[in-house]
Length: 172
Image (tube, rainbow, N blue to C red; front, side, top):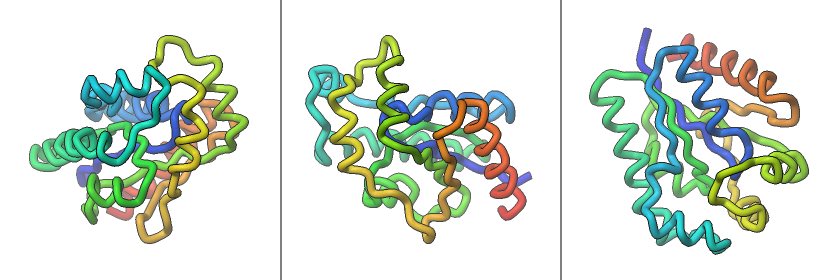
């Protein structure tokens, strides 16, 4: 089997961590929580309710890209979470690497806001959801995204994601 690195992307509270961890666990792949790679200044800014700008995000995206490149160089499959809201961010992190695929968690603001309100212990306040949605540039067909509808249950999301990953592995 060819190695594959997945980047599970979407706005805050779309289910990135849950989907990514589940895929990684089921496949025995390495998992990295992308939020853990944020510089402390970014976390403090978001916790204070201030949206990040591009300048804030570039060092974080460099860390995400480095994790991906380490997996690729080691010949390992892995799954990392990263919102990658803009095309420029995805280009920086993935940069046309055929063995890296985006899993895009797509859904309505209402579903995401409901999930966000129920989430405990995360630094991202609900007030930043609008800025995330405004910043989002959904991946286009040329990026070959694996698109998962988040409107159903978490189990439904995982089943969709697993099916799409299987298809991607067959095509690899």
